[in-house]
Structures are given as structure tokens and as C-alpha cells.
Length: 123
Image (cartoon, rainbow, N blue to C red):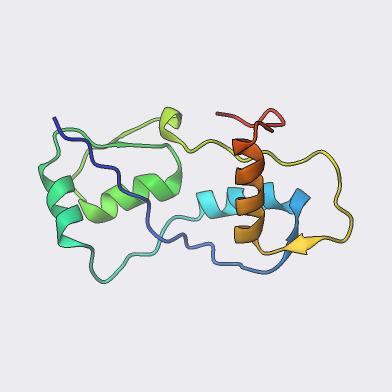
């Protein structure tokens, strides 16, 4: 048996301006729900793997489902929220005036999560 992990394609949500931490959850929701760009080409190894796979599993997020369909339009993928990434915790405290780029918030919040802070984020 072989298991291959493939990251979803580039999100159609490309807004990249500094935001407050409290706005990060909304930014992620837009990132998840806007689908993915169709690339001109995909790595041949990836196309081979998905073309010969017996089962393809994806999260239920639009970007994951679309990515699988772009790699193989004839695929019948099984989509389930079980395969989503862990949500990042959004701090309760308002960090007044602090605005950072979404990728910076993602790194900070991921570090907090690895350190044990979850603020009830879904696993």
C-alpha cells in the first residue's frame, strides 16, 4: 500500500494586506471557500499518482475538492471534514492596532497551537 499526500492548489483568494488578528478567521474562510487556480500544467509524478490511485480522499473544503478534480476530472473522490487541517486558534484578547500579513498571523497562531494554546479551535 502506498499513501501520497498532495497539497491543494493555489487559492483564488489572493488578498494579502495587513489585517487584525480578529479578522484572520474571516480571511481563512474566504481562502477556503474561493476554490483554486487551474494551472497550465501539473507535476507529472502527481498526475501519475492520482491517475493510478485506488482511492482519493480529500477534505470537504472547496479548495481540496477542486484540486482533486483538476488533477483528474474523472476521479470520484471521497470528501470528509475529517481530512481538514486543524483550525488555528484566534486569541480572545484584542491586539489593538496590530495588523500583520495573513501568512505572519498563520505562523504566529501555528506556534501558539504547537505550544498548547487552542482557544477551542477544532481539531
